[in-house]
Image (tube, rainbow, N blue to C red; front, top):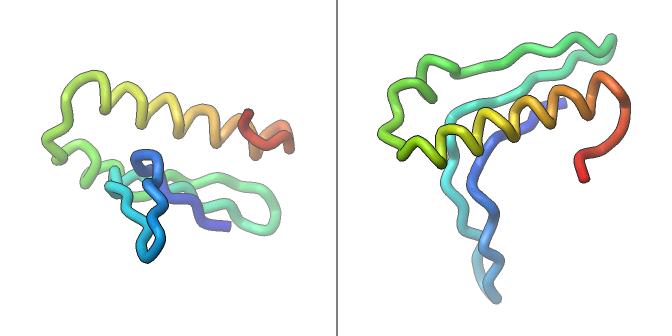
Length: 72
């Protein structure tokens, strides 16, 4: 399973828009978690609030996989 951390999607009639925040989570079939592209995330010019929200989302996503409960 692959998950991409991004801004909330804006769904229009003909498009879906979002900003990729570079952080990705790879989950293997045996449940091991690997965070990808942390170096790219560090290099993004994000305001502190957006950076904190992205990191919080990553933590919540990792916890969801560890506990087998989807984020709420």
